[in-house]
Image (cartoon, rainbow over all chains, first blue to last red; front, top):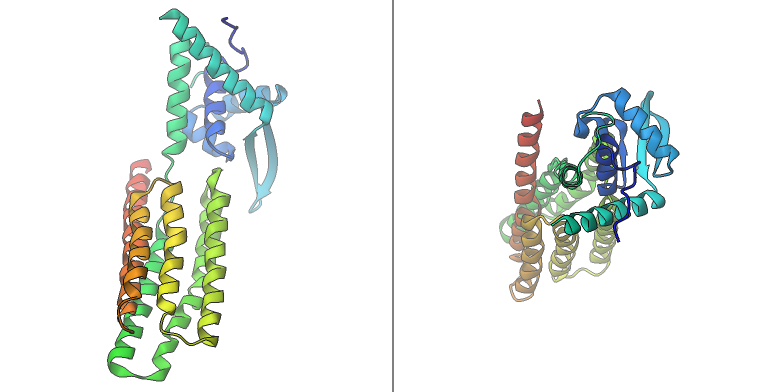
Length: 96
Length: 198
């Protein structure tokens, strides 16, 4: 049965961030910015939305006197991502 | 990348694939550690062989202490590389654990060798060299290190059947195949990637 795609994940930048974070244990904000080619402001907004949904953890700390933001996917985030991919595959196979 | 663009299902799948592959392609291994140990172990093995075969000077055998001195630059390299890295992969901790346990095993084996002076110790070193090398190559799907690990074990078997000090030449060959050559390949890849990103 086809289920609606998760609206939190079904957006270009949020999906790109989640796809990056599912591939690594944790990543710095700058890593996400480099890989997505998005602006820092856009990424911040989308990271906050993912954080509010409980899909990622955001750790703010200092490294060599500079602020550092580390993002890490949470177990509910992994579950939501897997569900999203599963629904996507189901949808695409129905469409064929 | 647009902040709220709604994607079609095909676009979503393509984006997921592209991002996962971008994260995987972020090859940051500099190869310096592999080169360092490849050079040090080759140098010590060749000097030690020359000494045992031709020179017979007791103090020259202390050349192996260079491997302990090399721990200092290795620690500095590890600290610098971890500071530079912008992400942590799932296998980073596992790889660190494997190489730290290898270092401890080598120190214990050196201690064992000094207590029970035996010419067969080269075989044990070669067996040990193969373990982290093969494990790293296997985990990272890096064929030169898989080959290096297997070569170390083949040389370990050969070293059982050849007289001392020729096993030291096998030790040098192992250092070249397991660390120096893979290190050169990693270094070349790293510099290529670095130049592309400039």
